[in-house]
Image (tube, rainbow, N blue to C red; front, side, top):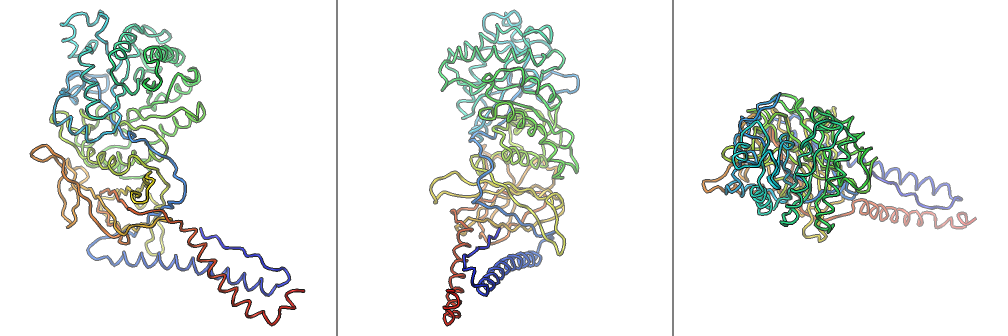
Length: 584
């Protein structure tokens, strides 16, 4: 906003007051006129940009001097892995066929390609759990379900318990450590539970936690149970709260040093259990949980069709996050964090030829930007590998389009402060909303203390499959270095199985591994800050703008003072012959 200066003048000089008021009003009108003229001029320039079918000329604005809304941790963007077996089925889904041998009991964690691609996503949270989590038996202390090597081998196929040997557990922890991932382990919270109002048998969990601590295995956090609050075979809110308290006591006992103690998160409930989560939060004592965790699948919106390209529809996928954030604020706002510990575009392992295609990157990036902006501490995407929504193909571990979205996010946006962004357009005399424009925008700034390394990154998403957008960027309070780095990603169609990236000369190169299993260079386009950003149809772009802070409001204030001082000097010359009248 433009703030008019109110100078102090003698009350006995009404002529001077009127003159100064006129000058101030004229100055304000002049400033606003220049802004309007500038906007119209930019619109005219965009409309005459040859070679593009432009729906409208979009504007993205950001006031850098305003305090950031939220900040993110380096490992905000994460992913999950599940225990599904190749022949496992549920009442609703044929999950085993979708997972193949990518479930954690059988996945090849020594695979060089898998390790290379997982490492490139670090730092990140790796959350292990899923529906079969509450069938796991830890092979320590001779549990009867996994008492023999034969029973352990048979557990690789459903039905029956899943036998997790301590050798396999060490291999999982080693994979996380070597790839730079923070491991979050979901514990079986249903072991030997016979009724919803009775506690689970904690003996097997106690031995597992003792082994993990005494072996010095690195675990960032534990969770207990998976979406079992009031479900069939699950537990009541009161009993589950008691179970969490007992697990918390074991964690404190085995990890007495707070600096190395894993966190405890829960209740890992879905949006269908929200009314029970409130009762769970009332039953559990303060200090038991380090954070609330929830699960969400946007199955109603993320279909292969129009809903995924409608901003208003994508916004509905954020309802669970809003609920849990509000619950955290009312429960323990000072310390209680919120994790989206299992979030995917569609339940039942995703949709074949849809959630494994380029279109899903729109949902993924919208969710990454929105949850970061809202204050969610961790967003764990389903999944790293496996099913139809994995970042990597379940058989070959080749990256899918969403992998490159995650990669660019981590490189450019993941560790910064997030700001509100203004998005709009003017097309002739009509003003379009963000939803009508189908342009999404998110912004962050670096946390660097030195001016030389400061930068702002914008994420722009053009959801339209038909229109190219010309986007003008305005950053208030920021002095650009003159150059801008642009990373543009699109595909041959929204349902293409492979993404592609724009090069400096305007060509598009496919985003895939090279013959020697290396990621492509993904070099940015270098452009001038003053140039508009051309957003291709069905595309997203990360825009990095180097520079340093410049208080635009102070500059305006200083300029205003110079103008007023000059006018006052002229005024004094004018009234000098009448000094006696002014002093009465």
